[in-house]
Structures are given as C-alpha cells and as structure tokens.
Length: 323
Image (cartoon, rainbow, N blue to C red; front, side, top):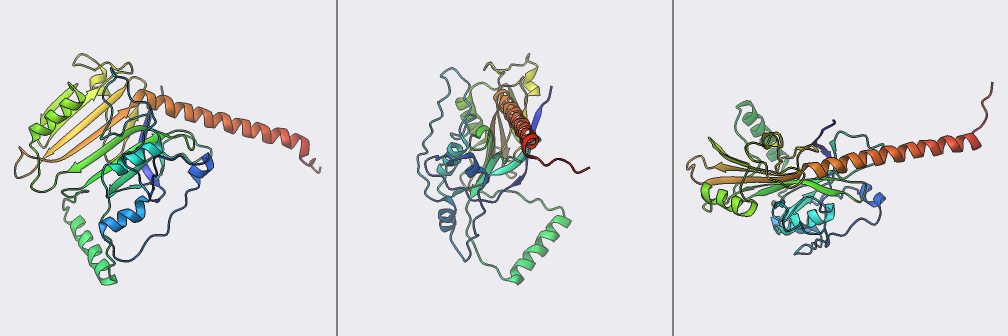
C-alpha cells in the first residue's frame, strides 16, 4: 500500500491577501498567480503587513461545517483539516494583525500532476520592519553568517514574541482543502508560562493524550485517533506508528491513522520550569490519504481522456504520412 509523505520543497513567492475567504473565480485563476513587485524603502512592521495582507476581514468567515460534537478536537488556533485553502489563510491572518501568509507551495507530495498546479499549502510569519541596507551592510551580514556557520553557532528560526505557521493542503485546482496545520510560538521575554501550565492547557483542550513524555529538553505530547475517531491507548499498535506534524512542515499520510495532534513544549535554558516555546500541529491522515489518492486518480483520468481525444482528432484531421 502506497503511503504519502509531504515536505515543502518549492513555493511561489506571493503574499496572499484574504478577503473573507473568497475563492478564485476559476481553477485557472488558482494556478496563474503572478509574483507581486516587491515594495521598497524603509517601512515599519505594520506598514509591511498592510502591504502584504490586503483587505483582511476578521473574524474570519468559515463556511466549512464544524466538527461533530463527539469528534476529536482537531484545530490549531482555529485552523483544522477540511477547511478550504482560503478559509485557513484568512484564519491564520486573523490570529495576529502582523501575520503575513506566503504561498502557495506548489510542490510537496510526490504525485504525478500532468502539468496541473496544485496549491499544496502555505507558510505564514509575522511581518518585520523593512530596512534598506547599504552594500557594505549586506556584505557584513554575509560575513557574519559565514562565521556563524563555520563556528557551528546555534541559530534559531524564531525570536521571543514571534510565531510561524505551515499549512498543508491538497485538492484539484481551486478546490484545495487543509490536510494538516502546524504552528510554533516563542513566548515574549518576561511572559514565559510554566511548563506545567502549558501542558495543562493542552490537555484541557485536546483531552487525555495517547503519549505524554517529559524528556530532557522538551515535553512531548501526542493524541492519536484511528479513522473512526477512537483514541489510541497503550495497547493500540497505531499509538507509536501515527506521527503528527509541526510548523516546519512534513506530513505522513496513512489510511490506518485518523486525527493526530502533536505538541512539543521547549523549556528555557536558564529555567527549565518555564516554557520557551510551544509547537503544535494537527493532521488528518486517513482523510488526507483519501484526498491525495482521489486527486491523483482524477488527474490521471483527465490526462487519459485528453490523450484519447487528441488521438481521435488526429485520426480525422492529421495529414497522411508521405512514404
């Protein structure tokens, strides 16, 4: 049985502006987004966000039906599997006034698309001030980076008070839906919650976990459900087989796994009782597997029909060979 793995390897650099979760007018509109001309000049983070976000309406309007009352809790700050691409982007931007969505990611799953462009996800980060730099400053930064790499210096992706997203989607052009979503947040300096309070908040939201490990350097918690929504306990084989996702991307899909929620709580180095950061992700493996399979089969059928039509037309209109 084929298993699917998603890892973002390429994306079109387009700042995505959301207006109430509006869909593209046609499938072609979803595949013909052109990169915008990059703004220039110094600007504050607020100005950068305004340029990139467009007319975002909050709270985000979500028409996707809510999960059933007895279903597992499956959202990360409001983003959940089954949402449309546009709905998820709108919810992400409404999570913070400075949050900017960049995408779409157009490669990830190793499937044959026959030239079709599928929006396979997007990323999002907080806008930062734009500062015009001199060539001397740019060269100095490049030298500093090289020195840091040669010295194996630890370089983090986020700073205190920042957050980022990575959302995975799949579907036919213009019909893409969320399969998984991951978010990472670094707590602002002086506002770090305790490790215990973060874990308690997670369990209050998601319930009793399948795995709860307080390891050196992090607390790892995972909620695993089978495709019927039943929580995996210690005796279930899928408890350790079904992996989650996070803010750095990467999704495994299997028909044997259902909803998987995963959290990593990282402590501060100088005080391990306080949390430095929290990474939380959700993926719907079984439904995601079915969606990717259906898209792959549909595109294959369309290609076969296209080729058959070309052969039929050739038999009527093509010139006879000169022998």
